Amino acid sequence: MYYIDPHIHMVSRVTDDYETLAKMGCVAMSEPAFWAGFDRGSVDGFRDYFRQLTEFEPQRADWYGIEHYTWLCINAKEAENVRLSREVIAMIPEFLDRPGVLGIGEIGLNKNTRNEATVFLEHIDLAMRTDEQILIHTPHLEDKYQGTRMILDMLMGDSRIDRSRVLVDHVEEHTIRPVLDAGFWAGMTLYPVSKCTPERAVDMIELYGPERLLVNSAGDWGPSKPTAVPDFILAMRKRGHSEAAIRRVVYENPLQFFSQSRNFRFKPPEVPELV
Ligand SMILES: [Zn+2]
Image 1 (cartoon, rainbow, N blue to C red):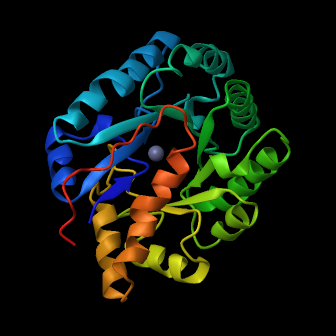
Image 2 (image 1 turned 135 degrees about the vertical axis):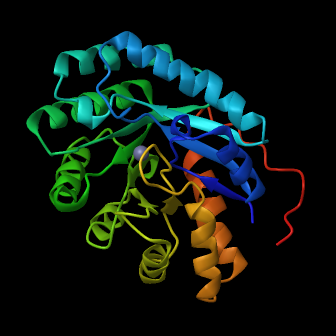
Protein backbone atom coordinates (compact mmCIF):
# COMPACT_ATOMS: atom_id res chain seq x y z
CA MET A 1 0.00 0.00 0.00
CA TYR A 2 1.27 3.49 -0.79
CA TYR A 3 1.71 5.64 2.29
CA ILE A 4 3.11 8.96 3.53
CA ASP A 5 5.21 9.30 6.70
CA PRO A 6 4.33 12.75 8.08
CA HIS A 7 7.10 12.88 10.72
CA ILE A 8 10.50 11.28 10.18
CA HIS A 9 14.01 12.62 10.78
CA MET A 10 15.85 11.37 7.73
CA VAL A 11 19.02 13.41 8.39
CA SER A 12 19.68 10.75 11.07
CA ARG A 13 19.12 7.81 8.74
CA VAL A 14 21.30 6.13 6.14
CA THR A 15 20.47 6.07 2.44
CA ASP A 16 19.56 2.37 2.71
CA ASP A 17 16.57 3.45 4.81
CA TYR A 18 15.24 5.52 1.90
CA GLU A 19 15.52 2.45 -0.30
CA THR A 20 13.72 0.25 2.25
CA LEU A 21 10.94 2.83 2.73
CA ALA A 22 10.44 3.12 -1.03
CA LYS A 23 10.17 -0.67 -1.33
CA MET A 24 7.56 -0.69 1.45
CA GLY A 25 5.35 1.84 -0.35
CA CYS A 26 6.46 5.19 1.09
CA VAL A 27 5.84 7.84 -1.59
CA ALA A 28 6.28 11.01 0.46
CA MET A 29 7.52 12.11 3.87
CA SER A 30 7.83 15.24 5.93
CA GLU A 31 10.77 16.00 8.16
CA PRO A 32 10.41 18.51 10.99
CA ALA A 33 13.50 20.31 12.28
CA PHE A 34 14.64 18.81 15.59
CA TRP A 35 17.40 18.58 18.16
CA ALA A 36 20.72 17.26 16.83
CA GLY A 37 21.63 15.46 20.07
CA PHE A 38 23.67 18.51 21.12
CA ASP A 39 22.90 22.23 21.26
CA ARG A 40 23.97 24.06 18.13
CA GLY A 41 26.24 26.99 18.84
CA SER A 42 25.07 29.70 16.47
CA VAL A 43 22.43 30.83 14.03
CA ASP A 44 24.75 29.75 11.22
CA GLY A 45 24.55 26.17 12.52
CA PHE A 46 20.80 26.32 11.96
CA ARG A 47 21.19 27.93 8.55
CA ASP A 48 23.36 25.01 7.46
CA TYR A 49 20.86 22.52 8.94
CA PHE A 50 17.99 24.19 7.05
CA ARG A 51 20.05 23.92 3.85
CA GLN A 52 20.49 20.20 4.50
CA LEU A 53 16.72 19.85 5.02
CA THR A 54 15.78 21.81 1.91
CA GLU A 55 18.60 20.85 -0.46
CA PHE A 56 20.25 17.50 0.21
CA GLU A 57 17.52 15.44 1.89
CA PRO A 58 15.01 16.03 -0.95
CA GLN A 59 17.75 14.88 -3.33
CA ARG A 60 18.47 11.67 -1.38
CA ALA A 61 14.73 10.94 -1.20
CA ASP A 62 14.35 11.58 -4.91
CA TRP A 63 16.94 8.88 -5.72
CA TYR A 64 14.23 6.43 -4.61
CA GLY A 65 11.22 8.27 -5.99
CA ILE A 66 10.11 9.61 -2.59
CA GLU A 67 8.94 13.22 -2.20
CA HIS A 68 10.57 14.95 0.78
CA TYR A 69 9.01 17.91 2.61
CA THR A 70 10.20 19.78 5.68
CA TRP A 71 9.31 22.09 8.61
CA LEU A 72 11.65 24.65 10.19
CA CYS A 73 12.21 25.89 13.76
CA ILE A 74 14.56 25.82 16.73
CA ASN A 75 13.67 22.87 18.94
CA ALA A 76 12.27 23.28 22.46
CA LYS A 77 15.37 21.62 23.90
CA GLU A 78 17.38 24.64 22.72
CA ALA A 79 14.80 27.23 23.77
CA GLU A 80 16.52 27.96 27.08
CA ASN A 81 18.87 30.07 24.98
CA VAL A 82 16.24 32.70 24.19
CA ARG A 83 18.68 35.02 22.43
CA LEU A 84 19.80 32.33 19.98
CA SER A 85 16.17 31.21 19.53
CA ARG A 86 15.21 34.75 18.49
CA GLU A 87 18.08 34.89 16.00
CA VAL A 88 16.89 31.60 14.46
CA ILE A 89 13.24 32.74 14.33
CA ALA A 90 14.37 35.93 12.57
CA MET A 91 16.38 33.86 10.04
CA ILE A 92 13.69 31.23 9.20
CA PRO A 93 11.86 33.44 6.64
CA GLU A 94 14.93 33.15 4.37
CA PHE A 95 13.78 29.56 3.77
CA LEU A 96 9.98 29.72 3.81
CA ASP A 97 9.57 30.10 0.05
CA ARG A 98 11.86 27.19 -0.78
CA PRO A 99 10.20 24.18 -2.45
CA GLY A 100 9.07 21.56 0.05
CA VAL A 101 8.87 23.80 3.13
CA LEU A 102 5.45 23.11 4.68
CA GLY A 103 5.59 25.36 7.72
CA ILE A 104 6.95 25.89 11.24
CA GLY A 105 7.84 22.81 13.30
CA GLU A 106 8.33 20.80 15.28
CA ILE A 107 7.84 23.47 17.92
CA GLY A 108 6.49 22.76 21.38
CA LEU A 109 7.62 22.11 24.90
CA ASN A 110 10.17 19.75 26.43
CA LYS A 111 10.28 20.42 30.19
CA ASN A 112 7.41 22.94 30.15
CA THR A 113 9.59 25.89 31.24
CA ARG A 114 8.89 29.59 30.94
CA ASN A 115 11.61 30.09 28.30
CA GLU A 116 10.19 27.22 26.23
CA ALA A 117 6.76 28.84 26.37
CA THR A 118 8.22 32.20 25.32
CA VAL A 119 9.98 30.68 22.30
CA PHE A 120 6.90 28.60 21.41
CA LEU A 121 4.72 31.73 21.33
CA GLU A 122 7.27 33.59 19.18
CA HIS A 123 7.27 30.71 16.68
CA ILE A 124 3.46 30.84 16.61
CA ASP A 125 3.61 34.55 15.93
CA LEU A 126 6.04 33.95 13.05
CA ALA A 127 3.70 31.31 11.60
CA MET A 128 0.74 33.69 11.80
CA ARG A 129 2.64 36.58 10.21
CA THR A 130 3.84 34.37 7.33
CA ASP A 131 0.64 32.30 6.92
CA GLU A 132 2.41 29.00 7.64
CA GLN A 133 1.06 25.70 8.95
CA ILE A 134 2.32 24.45 12.32
CA LEU A 135 3.62 21.05 13.49
CA ILE A 136 3.85 20.59 17.26
CA HIS A 137 5.95 18.30 19.46
CA THR A 138 4.41 17.39 22.82
CA PRO A 139 6.71 16.42 25.71
CA HIS A 140 7.64 12.90 26.75
CA LEU A 141 6.26 10.67 29.50
CA GLU A 142 5.73 12.45 32.83
CA ASP A 143 5.70 15.91 31.21
CA LYS A 144 3.27 15.02 28.41
CA TYR A 145 -0.14 15.68 29.97
CA GLN A 146 0.72 19.02 31.52
CA GLY A 147 2.76 20.10 28.49
CA THR A 148 -0.03 19.23 26.07
CA ARG A 149 -2.50 21.23 28.20
CA MET A 150 -0.13 24.22 28.22
CA ILE A 151 0.32 23.98 24.44
CA LEU A 152 -3.41 23.78 23.79
CA ASP A 153 -4.05 26.76 26.10
CA MET A 154 -1.43 28.84 24.26
CA LEU A 155 -2.83 27.86 20.85
CA MET A 156 -6.42 28.54 21.85
CA GLY A 157 -5.39 31.89 23.28
CA ASP A 158 -4.45 33.11 19.79
CA SER A 159 -7.55 33.89 17.73
CA ARG A 160 -5.49 34.12 14.53
CA ILE A 161 -4.90 30.35 14.47
CA ASP A 162 -6.83 28.15 12.05
CA ARG A 163 -6.90 24.87 14.00
CA SER A 164 -7.29 22.74 10.87
CA ARG A 165 -3.78 23.89 9.88
CA VAL A 166 -2.11 22.73 13.11
CA LEU A 167 -0.86 19.18 13.81
CA VAL A 168 -0.26 18.23 17.46
CA ASP A 169 2.08 15.25 17.41
CA HIS A 170 3.01 12.41 19.78
CA VAL A 171 -0.50 12.14 21.25
CA GLU A 172 -1.26 9.18 23.50
CA GLU A 173 -4.39 7.79 25.14
CA HIS A 174 -4.48 10.53 27.78
CA THR A 175 -3.89 13.48 25.43
CA ILE A 176 -5.65 12.62 22.17
CA ARG A 177 -9.17 13.68 23.14
CA PRO A 178 -8.55 17.35 24.03
CA VAL A 179 -6.49 17.76 20.83
CA LEU A 180 -9.23 16.37 18.57
CA ASP A 181 -12.08 18.01 20.50
CA ALA A 182 -10.46 21.42 19.99
CA GLY A 183 -10.33 20.87 16.21
CA PHE A 184 -6.61 20.26 15.75
CA TRP A 185 -5.02 17.38 13.84
CA ALA A 186 -3.41 14.71 16.03
CA GLY A 187 -0.37 12.55 15.23
CA MET A 188 0.46 9.20 16.80
CA THR A 189 4.17 8.42 16.89
CA LEU A 190 4.99 4.72 16.71
CA TYR A 191 8.07 4.02 18.80
CA PRO A 192 9.85 0.91 20.06
CA VAL A 193 10.67 2.34 23.53
CA SER A 194 8.09 4.99 24.43
CA LYS A 195 5.17 6.95 22.98
CA CYS A 196 2.84 4.59 21.09
CA THR A 197 2.91 1.08 19.58
CA PRO A 198 1.14 0.17 16.29
CA GLU A 199 -1.46 -1.81 18.27
CA ARG A 200 -2.22 1.13 20.59
CA ALA A 201 -2.56 3.37 17.53
CA VAL A 202 -5.14 0.95 16.10
CA ASP A 203 -7.00 1.08 19.44
CA MET A 204 -7.15 4.88 19.19
CA ILE A 205 -8.39 4.76 15.58
CA GLU A 206 -11.14 2.39 16.73
CA LEU A 207 -12.08 4.70 19.60
CA TYR A 208 -11.94 8.06 17.82
CA GLY A 209 -12.34 7.27 14.12
CA PRO A 210 -9.89 8.25 11.37
CA GLU A 211 -10.78 11.93 11.05
CA ARG A 212 -7.80 14.32 11.61
CA LEU A 213 -5.57 11.44 12.77
CA LEU A 214 -2.10 10.66 11.40
CA VAL A 215 0.50 8.00 12.19
CA ASN A 216 4.25 8.45 11.85
CA SER A 217 7.52 6.73 12.69
CA ALA A 218 9.58 9.75 13.83
CA GLY A 219 12.63 7.67 12.80
CA ASP A 220 15.58 9.55 14.26
CA TRP A 221 19.07 9.00 15.77
CA GLY A 222 17.73 7.20 18.87
CA PRO A 223 16.06 3.78 19.12
CA SER A 224 13.33 4.11 16.51
CA LYS A 225 11.95 2.21 13.56
CA PRO A 226 11.61 4.05 10.25
CA THR A 227 9.30 1.30 8.94
CA ALA A 228 6.80 1.70 11.79
CA VAL A 229 4.00 2.92 9.49
CA PRO A 230 4.01 -0.38 7.52
CA ASP A 231 3.83 -2.10 10.94
CA PHE A 232 0.70 -0.06 11.65
CA ILE A 233 -0.77 -1.05 8.25
CA LEU A 234 -0.24 -4.71 9.16
CA ALA A 235 -1.73 -4.23 12.64
CA MET A 236 -4.83 -2.63 11.06
CA ARG A 237 -5.20 -5.57 8.65
CA LYS A 238 -4.88 -8.09 11.48
CA ARG A 239 -7.79 -6.35 13.24
CA GLY A 240 -9.90 -6.69 10.08
CA HIS A 241 -9.94 -3.06 8.94
CA SER A 242 -10.60 -2.48 5.23
CA GLU A 243 -7.90 -1.34 2.83
CA ALA A 244 -9.90 1.85 2.28
CA ALA A 245 -9.92 2.59 6.02
CA ILE A 246 -6.16 2.02 6.28
CA ARG A 247 -5.47 4.12 3.22
CA ARG A 248 -7.48 6.97 4.70
CA VAL A 249 -5.13 7.17 7.70
CA VAL A 250 -1.75 6.57 6.04
CA TYR A 251 -2.29 8.32 2.69
CA GLU A 252 -5.40 10.46 2.32
CA ASN A 253 -5.20 12.16 5.72
CA PRO A 254 -1.62 13.39 5.31
CA LEU A 255 -2.50 14.59 1.80
CA GLN A 256 -5.47 16.51 3.17
CA PHE A 257 -3.40 18.14 5.93
CA PHE A 258 -0.34 18.94 3.81
CA SER A 259 -2.42 20.29 0.90
CA GLN A 260 -3.07 23.38 3.01
CA SER A 261 0.60 24.39 2.58
CA ARG A 262 1.43 26.50 -0.46
CA ASN A 263 4.69 24.59 -1.06
CA PHE A 264 3.05 21.15 -1.15
CA ARG A 265 3.18 19.98 -4.78
CA PHE A 266 2.58 16.26 -4.49
CA LYS A 267 2.35 14.16 -7.64
CA PRO A 268 0.60 10.83 -6.95
CA PRO A 269 2.60 7.81 -8.14
CA GLU A 270 1.79 6.69 -11.67
CA VAL A 271 2.31 2.99 -11.02
CA PRO A 272 -0.88 1.46 -9.61
CA GLU A 273 -0.78 -0.18 -6.20
CA LEU A 274 -0.69 -3.95 -6.03
CA VAL A 275 -2.97 -4.08 -3.01
ZN1 LIG B 1 10.41 14.60 15.81
